[in-house]
Amino acid sequence: MSTEDTYLHSVERMLRSIAPEHRTAVLDDLRAHFADAEEAGRSPEEVAQSLGTPAEIAERAEEEFGTATSSSDARAEFAWRVLQWAAVVLAVLTGVVAAFIMPTYVRSSETVSSDGTVTTMETAQTLIAVNGLWVALIALVPTLIAAVPLVVPRRVRMIAASVAGVLLTTMVLIGGFTLGGFFLPTAMLSWAALIAWARLRGSGFGIGWRIAGAVLTVLPIAASIALFDYGMPRRYADYSEGTGPSFGISAWAWPFLLAVLALAVLMIIGYRAAGWVLAAIGLAVVIVGLTSGDLLALLFIWLGGFWLTIGLAHAVTATRRP
Image (cartoon, rainbow, N blue to C red; front, side, top):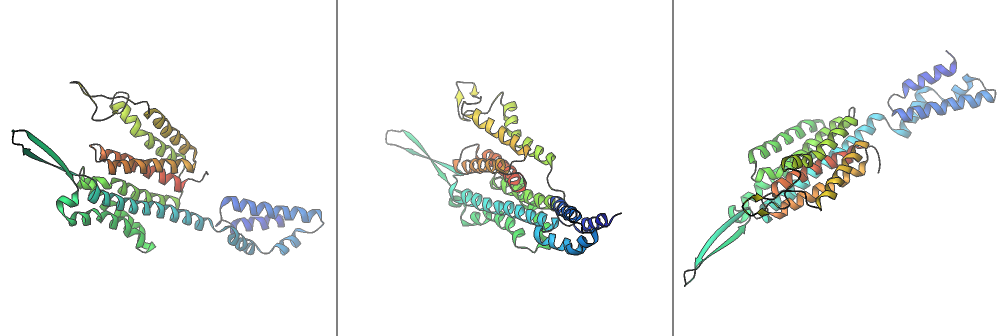
């Protein structure tokens, strides 16, 4: 083995801590130095001495490019914090709206006029108006649970995040279609944060994960089309005479469905912007669900939270821009 080959082999072994593309760039640069020196009549030994030892080359490369481990750790830290903070913020928003704003109870009262006419009045009331301030405190418990992993030491983060995910999921399962069910998006974001942190510190997210995310994105739409005979309700209270609710895809829904499908395709390709757009759509759907007070409000919150989680997770873990 020549002096040049021995030197380059030693440098390559020393550069295993940096990213492969940076390692290749450093080795190509060194080969160019040896080639130029050969044309100038200098020996490989003189070139190796002038360049420095392999350890010195590796040290300079790590200072310039950083190690692959530190780079992946930084990505994992960023993704985890974005998703976990999103879980906290969404828990605050959900708790405040559910306790103070959303009309949950409807009370009826009847009055009888002098001529015997009965008038029924319905009054919508919030949780806090009916049950008192303690309900607001209960509604903010998921916020505290989701915030704990952000303040504990890094060495116990995995345990704290896992416990937080289990507690939030348990609250959702116990609450079902009541107050606990409103926090399903918070639980999903908490689990997504934990998965992103673990995967990015390891092998990362490949094409299989992107395909799975895209399939899950279009799954609610596909399920609604199959379940409701080519569509979703135009309005869930739109009843035909004596035949029950009228179903079918409204004209305005087709562009929306096609847009979601296009976002799913872009996510498979790996475009980060597709995730941000899907997350924005999901957040908008959650807000509609929280503020509508309609019968299907909880389903809107679940669907929006589903898209918010998938979109935000893709946006902070994808490598392709925009």
